[in-house]
Length: 143
Image (cartoon, one colour):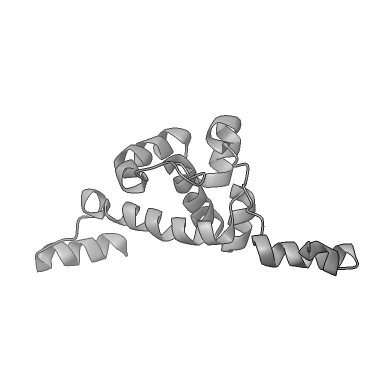
């Protein structure tokens, strides 16, 4: 006997199909903001120029690459732009996920990965003074 004949309306059939086959997979059509936005709009949205973003990308891309392209993986440029959007707005992950056209869980995995990759660049750009005179001098300059 066909199990679908046991149900008398469409709602019951939908519930049965969810139980039997699981929740249908969502595939998001991701935006390509790097190529579709003009330079002014891009800078307003991400607070950096396209040239600076490309420079950062070349320095961290190897940390963001996935070894395979299964399950509609997110490209390194989209990972970087998603993280930069969060940094530039100080907003919530769900708002950034909507903007990037990604699921919230995807964005919540991307942001720490990209942040860590950027943080690994720290020794190249941040130099802490080592002796007490240099520390005092830096403090006075900062003040």
